[in-house]
Image 1 (cartoon, rainbow, N blue to C red):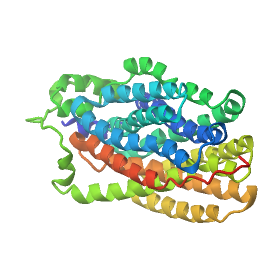
Image 2: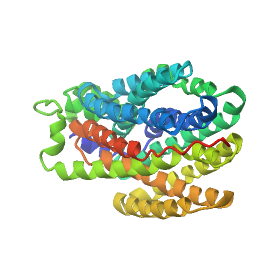
Image 3: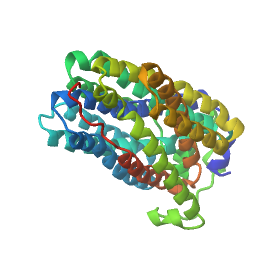
Length: 396
């Protein structure tokens, strides 16, 4: 029996939920870092007297790093394994985030934020690929959406850190808190196994059987598994061979649009509120409220994605995100900002969760990391284009 068949027919066990939680905490730290820079930017507008160009460079440079990091890490993970690259990317962005707190000039902050992006962008596709390869087929959509819901929790933690610490202790405190994931790597080293699908596809049948036994809760004999007759190296060109071209092009367009919508809205929200006359404290408070609504957005999509299907849920949530974005863009006053911002937050993040689940299922094991990584990497171009720095105001 192939490992894919055995894993697809498993039931969700405590192991799977534990894996989602452990890996999800890595996603939480990723999100916390992205969220922290959005709040730091709001504080730096006044502290460093940044103009619109400077704000745009600081805000977008991490996305440039994320684009490169996602493509590289996804490809390397198909060659060296998911687990090693997951821990490496965690270390890179955690340490670079801590170094960002030591920045005394704009160029230093830009350099460190680029390095942060390399690690941050690399961790996301590797994590979703790794968890997907453990999950049973019938629960895969719900599991991946649940994994990605940790992103909303991370943004919420960032909002809380910003609201409680930045006004009192300054913007550097936000980056110092973001360095905490470095300590988490020591825990990950002992508690995350390598993907059994990857192990089998690379000829490590005994190791694959051991990991599958842990996941299944009963022994799986190595003699019941079959390894491929030969192991081939992954190339980026494989994404355009064997009928993969339509999937690849479609996913690149989808990810570009999703990044454009998300980063164009949420990264700038605290800064936009500040430049429109709201105090820093109130701007952080309103952003915190909007951020909380991301969680039910994820959970609602998670409940529907395996029952209704990936495409219907994704289409509906994207359409409702577009309607919410239009209403938010034409809203006036605090009440409308909170209402329409919350609607956009709910549907946009629900769509994000489904997009991850849909993407990782489009490719076979040996190019899954490469396919996911390049889709997410190309998608960051949309995030960069979506950056429209708010004009600086003297009221900030």
